[in-house]
Amino acid sequence: MNEKRVLLIVGGGIAAYKALELVRLLRKAGVAVRPILTAAGAQFVTPLSLAALAEDKVYADLFSLTDEAEMGHIELSRSADLVVVAPATADLMAKAANGLASDLASTTLLATDKPVLMAPAMNVRMWQHAATRRNLARLEADGVAFIGPDEGAMACGEYGPGRMAEPAAIFQAILALLETARPLAGKRAIVTAGPTAEPIDPVRVITNRSSGKQGYAIAAALAALGADVVLVSGPTALPTPARVKRVDVETAQEMLIACEAALPAEIAVCVAAVADWRPTTVGDVKIKKGSGGPPSIALEETPDILATLSTNQRRPRLVIGFAAETHDVEANAKAKLGRKGCDWIVANDVSVEGTMGGDANAVSIVTVAGIERWERLPKAEVARRLAARIAQEFT
Ligand code: CTP
Image (spheres, rainbow, N blue to C red):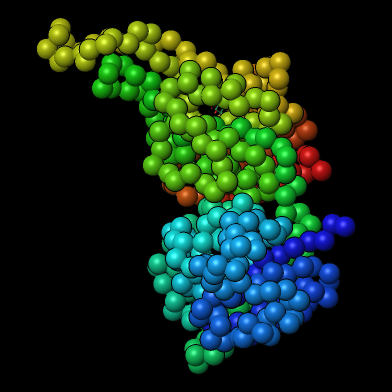
């Protein structure tokens, strides 16, 4: 029997009563529900109603000896196909965004390796506060899916976005996620990201302006679809996305070695802005200013990771490259597709202000079959669409 299972975290808010209807809908559809009730949530719904509707025990306490003896909280966090937070209060979002583990609900969210869906519910000003916007962006980058909030009259008397989505809508989102939750489960993906840094001497490097944001977002999006992701990253200031194995490298040569070590894989997405050239020789000592005027640095080409993976004996089934261009974007991308031997090129125009290092990207997907142009989207959204397109290739 392949019964689908949801771990439902009920936070503290007036919308908590709607969680009961959600449980009813899920049970009617044959989905098993295991509830976690926060201390604040218990002010709005009783453990007894939740347990009766869920037909399961309600978990509430991180330090319950009996619960731990039955099922440890780590096991609990992994005992479902999907974790749903409804209502997701500002407090729960803040805890999850910052990785706090101060109660059973937040600990579960930190420990889970399963996809997470949040249905936020809070006062409109709390929803619009800069802190909540930051937490939302952080959680989205970590691969958390959101439904709502809806706009409307609120229990506090104000009007605006902040009302929890209706149980029927959350129910539909859950069913969709349960169906497609992990289409890439069991598939390994290698993602390269960030710049590389090629040493000139022990203190100087040749590098570029890549932030790594797009590559990290793709790694997070693939992991959210169940892929086993190895993120081979040049130097960046970014946190490692959830459920992603990160390997830090500096040079193109190290990046290539790390990618080859991660083979075999079904998918490779080369997003890194790999330095094209490196100094031919690197001395052990710092080049001094007074040592005969500005130095001439002889350069040689770095290994092409994308081309090497595309022609590798253990070539991943789907190899995707990125082409950052400043002109003739699509023509250059088409030429690059042939030259590198990969399956798709995701082309972007980096001459558009705010693309390099910024948060949005307008990309075209170039394949032998043709070109698909996407509108300018946040990098996290480009990543999700790309991951969904990749998943299509495997279903
Ligand atoms: N790439 C790579 N290894 C390199 C250079 C590039 O894996 N040494 C990958 C990038 O990660 C990207 C793709 O190749 O996916 C295209 O990178 P780009 O720098 O645009 O290509 P180049 O071959 O350098 O072409 P050009 O400089 O002519 O634009």
